[in-house]
Amino acid sequence: MTTKQIDYCIELARTLNFSRAAENLFVSQPTFSYQIRLLEEEIGFSIFERSGKGASLTPAGAQFVSFLYGMREELKRAIEQGQNFSAKYKDSITVSLMVRQAIYFLPEAMRLFQQTAPAVQIVPRFQYEGGMDSFLKGEADILFSLREHTRQLSNVTVHDLFDSHIYLIAQRDDPLAEKNLITENDLYGRTLMVGGGSPTALKAVQHRLISTGRIDYFNSADHDTTLTNVAAGHGVCLAPGFLNDHSGQFAWIPFDCEERFSCVLCTHKTDTRQSLSDFIAILKKLYHDAVAFPL
Image (tube, rainbow, N blue to C red; front, side, top):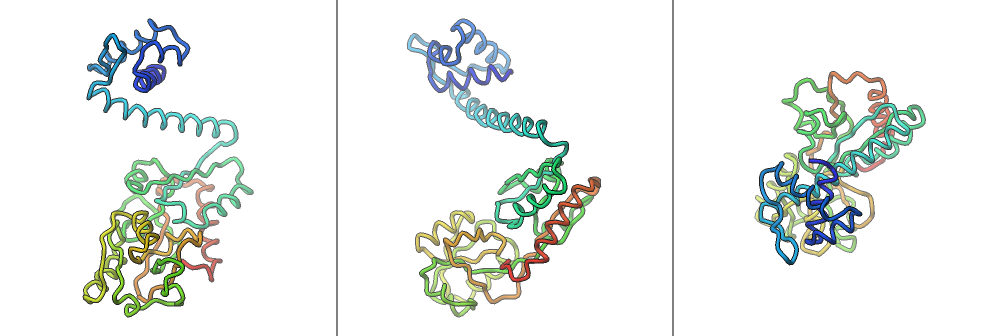
């Protein structure tokens, strides 16, 4: 399968007309049709049903084309990254994290690192799920994680970064937003959003609150869904401080509990590059110096 055949297939799936698809891609219709037929022979099933009115996707073809869209986008990004890398950089460090705000000081660390290592590219890679597996496969050089998720790992070096507290998230006009510290009693009679892949420490706090029988709760699929429900006035939620994007959309108020999240960076023991050590040192110093920064 060639990139040309992928483009032909995607365009035909869009237009469902051989003549129009060939014209849009500036090739003759016989050449276009021949390439589609070669692709179908290679994969062993029909992607399109031909008729006098044009073409239509077979059930197998519809599924196949949906994968081609993703493949083409990944290939496009890979080419763009390769072009960027070859033009300016001699090495790269890929950082895997679930959301941008997880490592709040990442942009500042990248800026500082660029001053001393301009030939090394820092590549953020956002993976809400599957980040650990991707890191273990060698697809990332640094992984942001919670220490509780690293205990069974081998051939991995774990670097302490910071401890994150638990915060209550509420609308800015919620009466709770006026408080400096939220206690269990403050949540009595309120609806608490729970679930959504909460870390162990957060689940423990949620369970403790719900077990009082004085707090309603609502299961939420993930953090973004939870925030949408909070914005809609459906309730409030508890979250780790490292998820705070500091946009000011919500009030983040410290919650009175002992639970903490130990946030760490993981690297491969076999990766002994000085540039990697230097970048991690910059990140650790930024967090160490941010004494008054809410985490």
